[in-house]
Image (cartoon, rainbow, N blue to C red):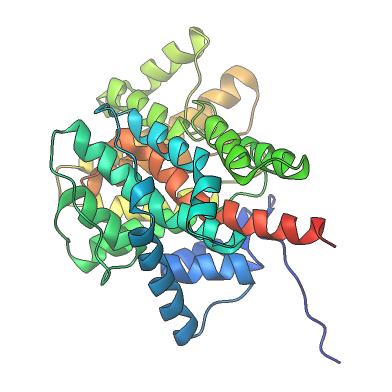
Length: 343
């Protein structure tokens, strides 16, 4: 008799510092699979066959085209990227009805359209012409294409995709808790997603990546790290990018992003940025021990925006890109919760 083990969408081993997606090491998936494969894995509990992967790519391309009327323009402000994604979520039930979608494809539309929304909003901010998504590109490549109008070398795209995959789910965070509360309370999908997105952008939640980058830019010189971080602590401010509610060691996502940042910065204009980040990663925990008696480690927010900067993506997009990735995990969770509620 074969016993089928059903893993949760994600879970953490806090002592070993490991994140799992449906029982698989998330950091390994991020470095060996593409976005669509991991999305399928989160939803179905296994990686797709070649045929299933092709069908998912086709479905996402179809939804991007069919739902063009739901890609709303922004207001020309950098901060409007998150607002535009929120507006998409608020209209997701209307989309479901007008396009006659089932729950799976409604949520897949949210995943598929998020990069279109973000790229459009950002280009509007710069006064640039909007770029249509291409049917021959996958999720990650399409975003870079729509954002910049060009496709960089394969390694650039691989690093970007790795970063997105690392952010696809987290089993214990405020936005997911809000999402679950709304679903269990019988809220509409639009209401549940909107609630999650409103919490997602909080500076103490996934808005922390941008805050960490702003802190690093303010420090400016590696020799000033200790002085500047002490000033922050003495004035009651946080050292962004240090500490995590669950991990009792370094955040495993931070380990992968640190390696990407080091590789991308080596021999480039970004070497100073890498040195600054690494100094904060060392001095920050040291000061936490000295001043507060806390044992803290670097988390993913310390590296997010820095990696995006080396990819030519503005740090201001950090929170929106986190949301773009996280819609995949939200899709898997909602499908699981809805299935459980129907039993």
